[in-house]
Image (cartoon, rainbow, N blue to C red; front, side, top):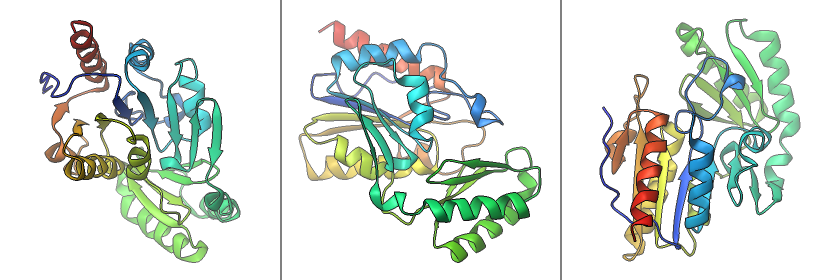
Length: 259
């Protein structure tokens, strides 16, 4: 059930709005390459970018994928692979420490292609390797065991998501660190997310609000039948679908236009 609460904070020139992609601005699909933003997302983000100080997307997706879908939104910040890649004001950046782990990612990909069953989908993100088992959820335990063993052999870290397990460089970077850096100079910030990886962003906003009494944080959780990680319990607002995110943005814009 959608909880369309009135916004706790006003959209001002010192506000920031940060969004996950899959499950937040787009629906979940078996083949991640076919996913696109839901109707209304692009004009909503475009309007936000004209009124807020910072608007950005923080995703597990590669930067190239995000740019393909969102480059037309002026001023929109993009952070891919949990912050290992970013694009701000037209400048693209790759974490140099993470870049050194490309050979290990390639080794993991070769192992996956040789050793994993055909029912799983292997997604090479250059600086991360995602193993999707949405089409065969009964393989979860075996996939997680394989990923753990491969991480031990290659030195990579493991990141668990919804119906996916990833091998990533052992670099201290997550959605929370991206949100912390983007919150500099803001008095209000929203974060919209739906999965395990979004907890770090929620926690970053809560910490900033605790340490800065003049700062207002609004954590928005998008829940669905697969939600099992308690994100809604940490949220200030709960929505039930990406389409509801568009509606929430439109509400924020309407309130701001009313002055």
